[in-house]
Image 1 (spheres, one colour):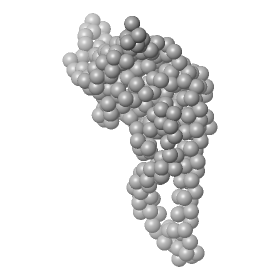
Image 2 (image 1 turned 60 degrees about the vertical axis):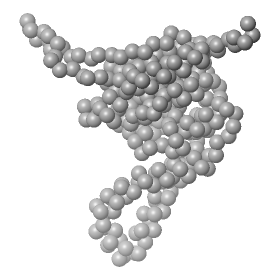
Image 3 (image 1 turned 60 degrees about the horizontal axis):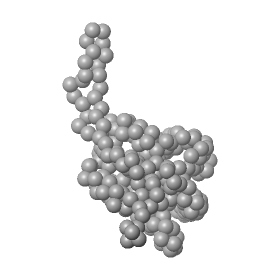
Image 4 (image 1 turned 90 degrees about the vertical axis):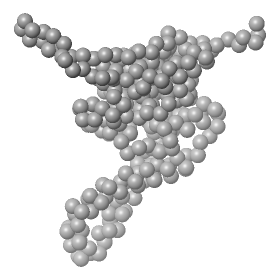
Length: 281
């Protein structure tokens, strides 16, 4: 549905590219995975659908606070809140990087930036609600004079609940990453994937797969070269998939005239042992 409406919002990720991304990382129920997803949470939703009620998923996002659409596809699944909160945990990338470096990241600053992003995303919704309920609010204010205060208190309470839930998710995500024994890594970033991939693969267990999707080939080539130079990845593969539909009719089966111009590029890899130091020879 998202691809049919606007492929650019998904980075031109077709259904076949998404299927290869999930298959290459062996996404199964009960597993523990990391996802860096910049495309409406599509990869996150696909992993959640395969996990079901079992397993754990750490959703890492760029910056200190999430975008308003970072879980749009997850919300479209209409999963129960208990399943989402017990399975899916969010974490800003700076906190994951600080955890790997052995330093601490300011949770207060992270939470403050999240509040700013929420305020920006909520402003349009509040304006729309205000226009729809303008007549009703006016009558309420004439009756008791407390309409605005009630709306503000409800908004503050909901924001504090979301803030508490974010902090709980981040703490659970950090506890998972500290084990450095996760089962797979999926990266679908609109930014350059090299730093994200090299950082997050350190939290995987040995010989666990990871895959990187990118709309363009050049960033993946640079990521491929960085992994080769580091020497801790084996079976590196960079691929592009063509998807061409076929019309199947009696006595006249043939490929369709038009086909998709491109569905992005995919890099599939297995982490290996660290590269030996050549200075000792």
